[in-house]
Image (cartoon, rainbow, N blue to C red):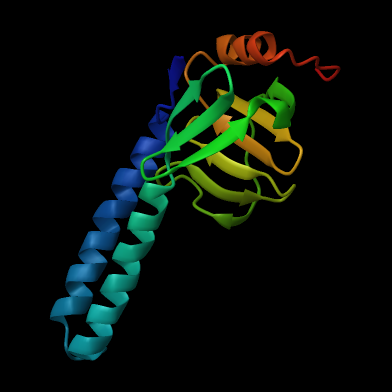
Length: 163
């Protein structure tokens, strides 16, 4: 079993910390200002903000685990298990923006669905990998992404025609 960590880039760290500070200030303001929203409205909006933050944190990729039978995308809460027989292709991607249909654009990473219907669990856009399976496409990031791609190809015997 081999483990590859998914570390946040400087951009993701700055975006996350800045957004969290702003959201905490907004939540505190909403809960303490009874004039505009009322106590109930401020509390409801604060709960929605906190729930959104928890959602993106819980879906943030922590590490990628390779074992002989499956590739495991371990999130902060939960995991996605991809059986080795389901993997069709894997390739390293170049740095680029990730156009999302929905998701976070830097808060705890680029988490959500992209325009090409891939599941994005990217924390560093310089180390992105696309994993194509029979049913889904995943875009993830990991330290030593080149080594990860070659190890997956070797371990799971994947032949790739794409560059």
